[in-house]
Image (cartoon, rainbow, N blue to C red; front, side, top):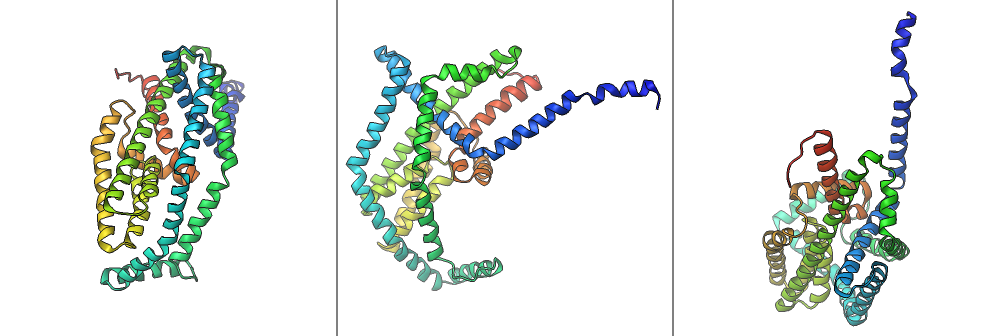
Length: 353
């Protein structure tokens, strides 16, 4: 090989691109290793955006500064939660204990019905074959299900420290949001800094609108479901309505999750009651999906349903329960980043919104 050939290869062997690729790989590995911390940080950003929105409202109405407004918004939210716990906590706790105690009986009724119907016998055989194929030497069904529920509840109650950390970080972020925003933008090249700032502001506005619309949707679903169960005469209407509202934070999947314990408990009141409760959940979710959410999405962010389901599956498989809860806002952020950075800046396809 001649000296000229070696000289031609010199630009290709520069260490700069190799170092960049290595740094990106290291960054991705660190992000995967600390994914739980990053998800906690993303959740803190969501709460901080909500606190800043409350502070902005107080600033417009009362002329209060942003830092006192953030603290007042946080105290008001904590006071509201504490008031709900004091006012409705005992009733919800009692009803929740009744719900847990009634589920084994409801499951027995389901098992009896399955055992006495041809379709049920076919399903039971398929389940037994699947368990045998997986090497399960223990009987499936209720004990394993309730052991899983108990373990989940223990995990939830054991996460109080993380919740306190989440709220603390969110308050600090909300108090000095311009400082943290400016520090993050300093990591961007000066020529792209203004563009990055506009994209960051767009994501903050979209997340704020999504949270406002989602909160309204959850409250309305909880109220309508609880009222409907109360009119049907279902004893645990309060806690079942609360579960329906809370699980509605996960689109498409949440309503099915909330309907399962309601229908199981209704079975203890009779098969007809279970059918009425199932129909109630179907009607509420149809009205919510086809009437309420389109009205809310005129103000809040619109997300394609198919992408939403895929995001729930993807983030859930990667990050577990936290990924499921945060799948929708993560999808919203991803759509904005792809649209602004890749479609508009890389491909040059700029369109008016």
